[in-house]
Length: 204
Image (cartoon, rainbow, N blue to C red; front, side, top):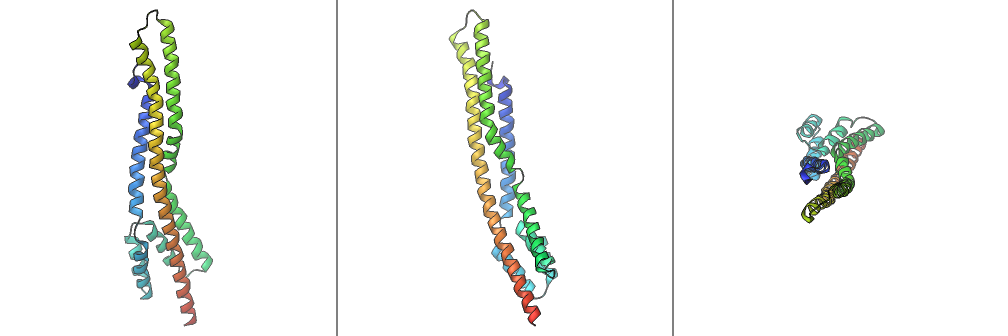
């Protein structure tokens, strides 16, 4: 028995590849999602103050970041009732957060099941070791150690994969939570600005 011939080895290797691909894809997406929302809002608000809603929408459409989609939704519904405006912004915010959060659950699941799969490989290996010993009258120490080591390496691989994936998941979760806080702040600011501007227009 060799480690590379074990189904558990290939299962863990496949999970490792999935985890690495998922991590870098999510990392790049979350990195693109983070922009200086304060400067972005300042630019949009300056354009809105000039009375050019179309240009403000164009700025949002040209900016590939979640905050731009939320601000765009607010600008498109700026003349709607306050409840409708807030619901539109909240709905867009939930959609953007859901998009950023996708496939993160896959990393969490891999981190949870990897040790169990490794342990399963160890148990299967020891069962094969016992069967090997019982079926052979003469068993050398080298052969016995080889089979036993393959079993132990399965557990080690599972634990190592779980630790690595947990770190990946944690780093992405921190980045996602930071982005969510910025999106909420941007939504609050644009809603506050639109509420203030609507009151000024009504007073005028």
